[in-house]
Length: 288
Image (cartoon, rainbow, N blue to C red):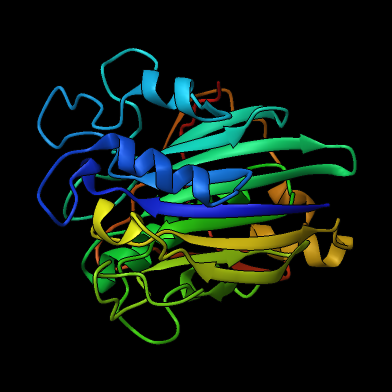
C-alpha cells in the first residue's frame, strides 16, 4: 500500500503579507494531494486558543476528516497541532502526548487500519532549543514503546537547522528524511520540516510544495512524502519500540487520551531490561 503523507506549519493562517487568510491555506492543503496531513499552528496563541483555521472551512472545502484532538473547546488542535485524514481511511485510535520542554509542547498520534495491518502517524512541532528537542523525541519514543508495535511515521516541524541528524533520540529503528528546504517560505534556507520513518515504511519520493499560493500563505512551505507500507519482520518491528521484545516489557493497553511523559533535566535516564537498554518512562495515558 502506498500513501502520501504531508506536513504543513500554517503559521496561524497569517501569510508573509501579514494577512490572515485561511482560504489560502486550504488551497495549499488541497494541492498537496495527500492522504494524511499533519498541521502545526492551527490555533491562535492566547487562551482560549480559538482555531485560526476554521473547522467549517475544512469540512466544506476539503475531502478530509478532522481528528478530534480538541473535542471540548474552541481550538482545532492540541498545542496547535492536528491531523487531517482523507475520508475513507479508518482511524482506530488517537492520542495526545504531553512533551517536556521550556515552553508547552505536545504531539498528536493517530493509528490507522488498512487491509494488510495498521500503521501510525505522529505529528510534531518540536522546541527551539536542541536539548529540549532531544528530550521531546525521547518522550515520543517512550510513549511508542508502550503501544502496539506497528509501522510509524513521525512528521512535522522539527525546528532543527542542522543539515543532518536531529532524530537520534528516536533510536536506531527510525530513518530521518528532509524532503528539502521549507523555511522561510519566500526564500527557503533550511529544512525545518522533516519526516522520520520506522520499520515497515519505505520512502519512494518526497518534496517541498512551492507552488502559489504556498510562498505567501504561511512562513513555511509544506512537505510531502510518498511511502510504501510493508509489515516488517518481528525482529525489525522491535526497533519501533526500542527494545528486544522480552516478556518483562510486554505491551500494555493504555486507556486514556493524554500521555504525560516527564524527564528530569537534562536528559532521560536509561533502564535496563533483560538483553537491551532502552529509554523508558512510566506514563499515564488516554485513548479516544
